[in-house]
Image 1 (cartoon, rainbow, N blue to C red):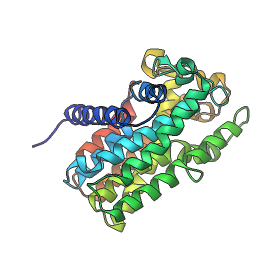
Image 2: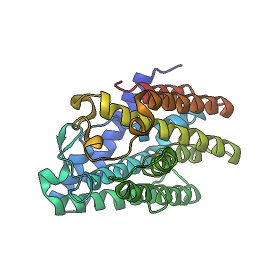
Image 3: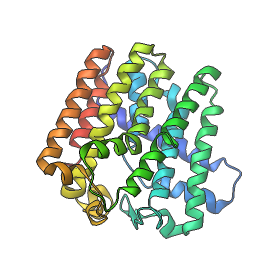
Image 4: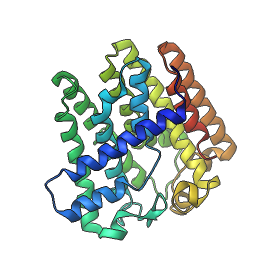
Amino acid sequence: MTISMEEFSNRYKTLLDRSLLSAISKLEAPDVLKEAMIYSLKAGGKRIRPLLLFSTITAFEKDPERGLAAAVSLEMIHTYSLVHDDLPSMDDDDLRRGKPTNHMVFGEAIAILAGDGLLTHGFQLIADDNHLSDQIKVKIISLLAKCAGPEGMVSGQILDIQGENKKMDIVELEYIHRHKTGKLLSFSVLAGAIIAGANDKQLALFEKFSQHLGLAFQISDDILDIEGSEQVIGKPVGSDTGKTKSTYPAILTIQGAREHLSYHIEEAKNTLKEIDLHTSILEKMTDLIETRDH
């Protein structure tokens, strides 16, 4: 039976949200720490990364719930990065998804520790998962550490900070976003493929797909920063421009950014055709990234 994107999204977002809260509530930790962790996890968002993980497993006609622990871990680690990204020493944002940022509610010290807690507990969840073999868990933990750490997202964040008030070319900007945004999106897809039992050829194609999708996601974000509404993007419009960050519209013009977005979306879809699996949900996820709230 074919499932619609809306049904798929609602089903697995509900499962994910319930599992996120359950994982934190079980912790033997100070209440204020758990409250701060839950606050940012409940701030909303489309849960695109976990949904990509579930969608990839679906492409192999396997049960997406086999990836639940990895999906919960992924969302925790993504959320930690946002909590730290919002700090005064980083992007210094007061709003995240339309709500006061974590440090505005709990103070900077608690926000830092809440982010630390989300990061480290995410890895524990995968290690303790009873549905995956030890071999698969080690592969996923290693991949997640690489994608989220100094060879991935953290590297991209460093370069993004260093790039403020500097004029970049498109090659430099893409390098930053392949790391800052793209690496965790790649993990979403590759972890799902690993859990589903992908072979080396399939993994290579899924990695290619995810790289195009990651760049498309960031270009879409940059366009929304100009053309979106505060209600939609959850923070003031033009916040990146105000911080004199290099963006795709700034380098390519808004029309050029749209053309780059279309190119990466088309390449992502072409790669899905090469994979030759049941990728209808992944195709719909790709469409969602292209059209989200534009």
